[in-house]
Amino acid sequence: MQNLLQSDLGSSLLSIAVILGWIGLFSVFLRILAIVLKKVLEAIFKES
Image (tube, rainbow, N blue to C red):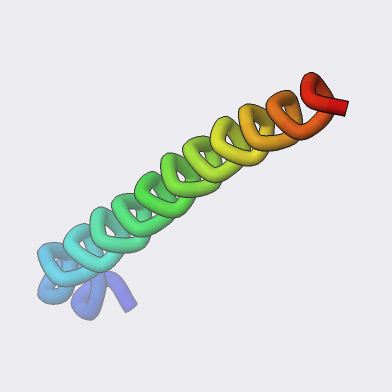
């Protein structure tokens, strides 16, 4: 187990970095979507 971790540490770190990157991008996308949705709803309710 120790040998496997030592030899494969680089690819493990790379995988973790890629996963964290995708999670970060997804959270930013969700945040932007939430802001846009909020603006749209505010515009709809201001008109009526």
